[in-house]
Image (tube, rainbow, N blue to C red):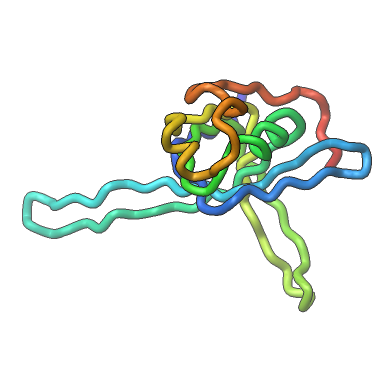
Length: 141
């Protein structure tokens, strides 16, 4: 038996990038920062805070929700699985990337924070803890 499951709570690092494939399927990508607090050991040594950046990929309904409601600085809970892939960059150099393919997302920012970050109408914003489930169909990749 094996398990590939990731749960992250963090802040969106920049505005999400949402694209639509030729068949109309939405795909969103965003970066999520998770930070471990710094602390001091008993011997007086300071351990600095550590921030990790995660590449998140969301498909279909989740991508459409991200497009409408998620902005830089928002706090998200993301649940999904780790996927790694490689590609050749413009110079022909092989690059490797690790991504989190989200199955579930929950917006944790309050309405006030969301409204301050983006000025669109408040009536179109979802509740602070709106939960959206991703589709379970096969993904086109």
